[in-house]
Length: 555
Image 1 (tube, rainbow, N blue to C red):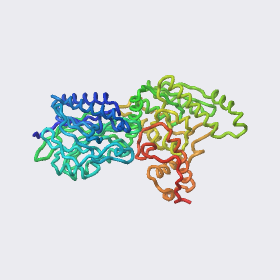
Image 2 (cartoon, helix red, strand yellow):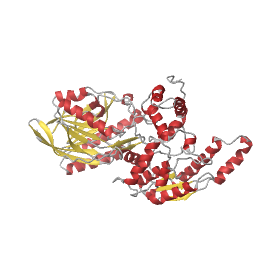
Image 3 (cartoon, helix red, strand yellow):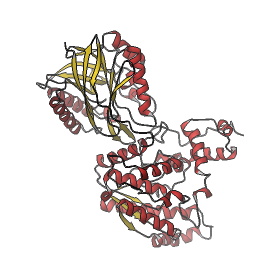
Image 4 (cartoon, rainbow, N blue to C red):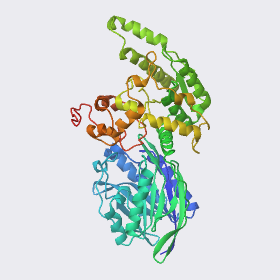
């Protein structure tokens, strides 16, 4: 038995399915923990497989290889003097569990299974795992340690059971993705468990992007008395070592590093940059290309890309047609110069006019409409994809949540691309974030400081420039109105009658709902992007394409 513990939290960035890579990260962390004189080293939820493996868990060979990797990691603890809390998958009697292994001196000394399996929003663990029983604490270095796994702490009975059976300290591994206010929600949750059970809790979260999910780290520890004694970095890997002492039967933190939490204004930018960086790099790309139109959305995506990879890895292309304004040409060039990007101009006049000439026998004398406009957008998409294919750059698409919500985007045109950093960001939030970025440069970002997005881009009326003197408000209500209606429908699932009661025009509300519903097929084919809100299209909101439901609360 000991009255002192040095605990290391490995806030790392695993890659789903990369068992050798994740095992290498774990070995490095064990070496760091040994060098730091740690007694316990904890990894985040499902660390070896990455969170979340999805249907890899139906592949028998993957299960075999993952379990072998876990045994290999436990073997690494022989002679290290460090006990490892290793979250991974485990088979028990043919049943698969979300599990934690405790490894010490080369042996598995305990196995615990996650009891509460989440099955809502982005989580569907019941599809794969069997729940475990209410678990007993684990004895590590003579200390009774409770190990609730992520969702377990959302249910008071799990921690209460551990505390009643002698747990003196709780170590909780998590795979908790970011969305708005999530960091504060987690803290309130842990505060509640600590207050109820009178036992300190160390909360370890992973960091990094995994497809549409972004994990923000921000690991922390709270003692009874509502004391925040430990706070890791947000949106960055971290290795957090703290010392704990026992006096009068209670464990307290003797020295814990407390980092500043990212502000609510900064967090969306960091999430988009991290999600973009990891999606591109983890999928084997090293640089990106995008169409830079002189508008706010492409300017913000260009700035995010420069922050993610550095300006030399970002290729911006302006693709003008006869409706492209001189202001847009000037703003796009200014934006690229401020950010230090490679900038090229590829005019689309000849290919668009050639396509229109070829279609003349079919189109006949029918009046111009969206068919001709979409040819422009699709020609731009074709050219950008050609550059992507030839130069090996991932193409980024730039549509925001407001546009994607009502289908104000051209499928196989401006929707082309491998990733969309703005997919879950409403238009007015894009404007706010542009102004924020002009005044701030986060420490892990690789772009230039200062006003990288010209104020002229922020100030001018948004336009797709697909016909003379076009603005977005020719087809859509003002974005503050549109965003509020979409927020009510998408984020809050409000009845149309209640939205009208907020002061919105009934006919407009019905029109926006209709546009939202008929654009589902476009969103289903859109590029992935980081989930920033609880109701992100794709990962957070799944509606049928063929949908006959009618909300009759508005006549």
